[in-house]
Amino acid sequence: MNIRTLGLSAVLSLALLVSSCGPSIYLAQDFRSYAPKHKIVAILPASVTITQRPNQARNTSPEQMRTMQQQSALDFQQRIYAWLLRGQSQKRYTVEFQDVAMTNSMLRKANLTDDDMRTHSPKELAEMLGVDAVLTTDVRTSKPMSDGAAVAVGLLVGAWGATNQANITVNINEGSGGKLLWKYDYVASGSVFSSPENMVNALMRNASKKFPYTPKS
Figure 1 (cartoon, rainbow, N blue to C red):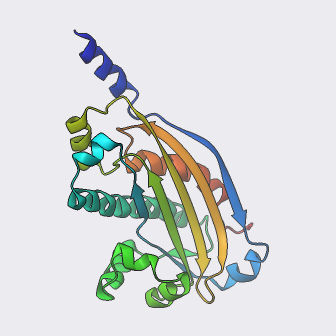
Figure 2: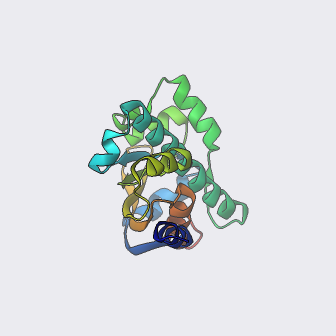
């Protein structure tokens, strides 16, 4: 076995490891005045920004980049929904979460692209979706995190050994006025093989412990 193979094996053995820094959490002082009125929360597709290294950027077309970001946006949305739906089924939360298939269908009917959503206020989005609050996720990373595209780019530029950082912010804004009720800032790092699933698992293991809309909040 040559050095290249050994190096690749070592990277693969560490591929699923994700480390993180302590999160920063904000909860509005008057959250309890809003929570009893809220019944349904919509989880929007994540806003994903990928910053590539120069050699990656040269080998990635704008269309490929858009595809990676759009797929990652849906990956994060679906996996966060799955986490929260599990808690909902266990009666851990005082709200329900709108099915993301319904959320995305209504966004498509309104002809809202990912970029368009960034220009609409939380209040406008909540009214459009018929919910009491919206959960948004902002992901800023140097790693192409959609599985197929990420591996393809990694193979292309040979960037297997690099460790990348993802800055993830989760916000909950109430729908009547758009006020920020909860904010969770999280920093995670992992290899180029770290998938949205691994990132969300690391995020939600921590965030779910501090998530609002619980009987005690």
